[in-house]
Image (cartoon, rainbow, N blue to C red; front, side, top):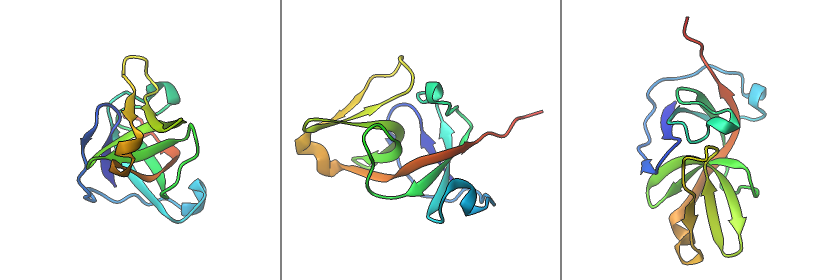
Length: 124
């Protein structure tokens, strides 16, 4: 399990900070990885800072799916919207601006996988 920004783009560093034992079929597949969410740009989609986002590794994303994406080596968790020749990375929090990836920049965008679920650990 690593971390991912739910806010502005942040430098992506692949590192397993800890492991998480979860049955793969709980989230519908075996190509899964977990990322701790940092930031509140996806709060209105029910993904809060500190949550563990379960991501199914895949390179394609359907319109309006929430995905872990990299843009020019920086990663974020956002809703992916295909708008003509552009791709819009949209937060689920009105206080965050869209990130627009123009057609001539499309090769700088890489989908890491789609959000399949969230684990929230309550602190008592």
